[in-house]
Image (cartoon, rainbow, N blue to C red; front, side, top):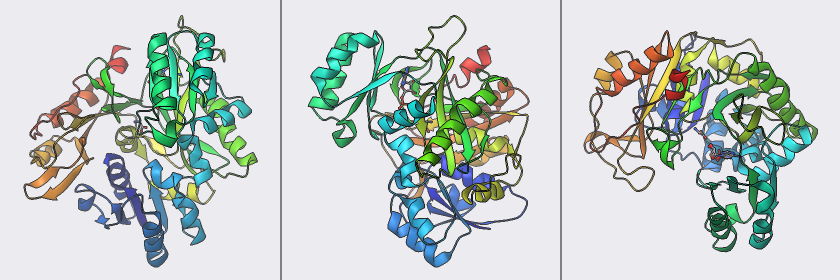
Length: 431
Ligand code: AMP
Ligand code: GLY
């Protein structure tokens, strides 16, 4: 198969890597890719958000399938453009990508479909929003409606923090149009997990559950990042919960979108909060509630989940893109996987680029998988080129072994300013 992967991060490297493991060889391209994808695919110099450029390339090159990594090109209508040229796209049309692009839209769909989620109200006026805070108690969550690079969510512990967040978004326009409308939302108590569901607009298949680590420092401290590590399976999600997640969350959303004329094909990623026994139940009365939806594979969840998938990955993606998902097409390796992100000093704030990276061959020799997130081939050979630089995945018979194998790989790698969390999978290991 001839396949184009759109994007340039660790997620896209993991997608290209997993495609390269299929028994039948593929011709894989990445737009634009990175130094890691260059080793297993052909990088083409078209930016991931250049919808016209990618559609033009696809119209000329006629790939069998385009797999879209990031949300921005989906929200901009890349899948819609590809459909005009008769090219199969794994990733939803723009109307479907609104599940990620607009938190208000996602709430409307969930409310219409009866999907358990945090109770929320939408506001454009700061005074009205502040007047409503009392209904929600503390802590309370304030969210910009639109895409704000993961920074548009404030979990406010005090009334003053909540009011400041509302002023930032609605008065000072800190997030521009993305924050012109805000949601004031009920705080959900519990432990988060990520469910990546593959759907063709009718059927769905849940990929193995995983858990991300959003904060920069050990112990889940410090500012939010794009994700500092992940592991799968995530024991907070028990086997009994999976049918419930599929039947009460994923399928109702897909069907509600379908009723509105939106055929959602690709990954519907549900960020869920699991409230423990004894924890404070949400207004919905459910122990499993949706925190957010994304319209794509998670990063770094993908680097932990995809190495566990068995079967013909490309065929499963293509069948999904064509509306013929076979729910038994992929199997799951019983081994666990753990992924540690190596970041540049300063991330998620300002950081330097162009630092030479060494030890990747030695890391690979330990058996760890090294995915490139922000790298380039520059004056120093392989160099850092982003905040998140590498994702190192270990596999093992147990989660403990997987974590140890990941850190054994990490131990071989170095670059100036390299930082990483030492406690990846701590919640899973504690169970
Ligand atoms: P989001 O961008 O919606 O994923 O929110 C970012 C993070 O804020 C989530 O991963 C949660 O850790 C936290 N968060 C968002 N909404 C809630 C909520 N209703 N209750 C508790 N935590 C939340
Ligand atoms: N790891 C969080 C995300 O992909 O949105």
